[in-house]
Image (cartoon, rainbow, N blue to C red; front, side, top):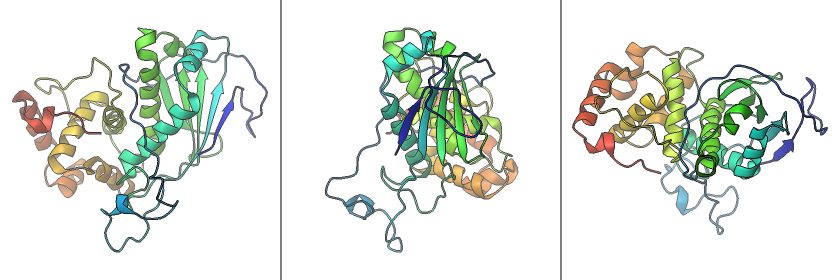
Length: 304
């Protein structure tokens, strides 16, 4: 995976290597903060396993799959638009930029598309994301993801320097908070959305579910005692509901949800019964009851 660090304002046609110091403003979608817990790394392939070969780690694949597909390696870029901003110092001091972005991409691919850490599930189809550019700039909010000027296969994550500068307590939380926000936004670079019809709460819930699985949840996240609200309330509320479904229906449930959103437009009346055999309202009621009575499928330790 190639990472190119670029500290520039990017022209429409290309990205050059001339450093500039500017400040922009914009709008962002809020993303929750996280605790000082290191992200879950994507392990390296076993040293005795040749690149592209199947081995013991792939024994779970069915016989008709001779060689599972490896994860694609997108081009990764970083652009800092104001090196004089306090948030730039916090960001560069808190994380190894190359490592944290590569690690986050690996974790997102693994949880949305993988049967193990090195190969994708052949029954899933990963998005055609060719590159991701993380742009640090002075703006309101926290972060948002969009397609680039090239096309939708080239993604941009806009991350607020103002927000990064305001992380507190900085020493304890900056590293994991930055990794958590990047992980959440990278999910948006790789998830399917029912061809634009998926409820926003489910889109955001899947992103925070991956963040939850990476042990990057902030201290204020919790399963509500009565699971108040709606299943598609979004963010951590839906993330914990999805975690419950993953426990109840087995590992890979969220992966199946994502794949179904690739295949068809979202129709709530048919989507959930067709996938899990129940209406989503019934599943939410079951989840609320499980939380209320502290049943293991709702309150167990998050698996890694």
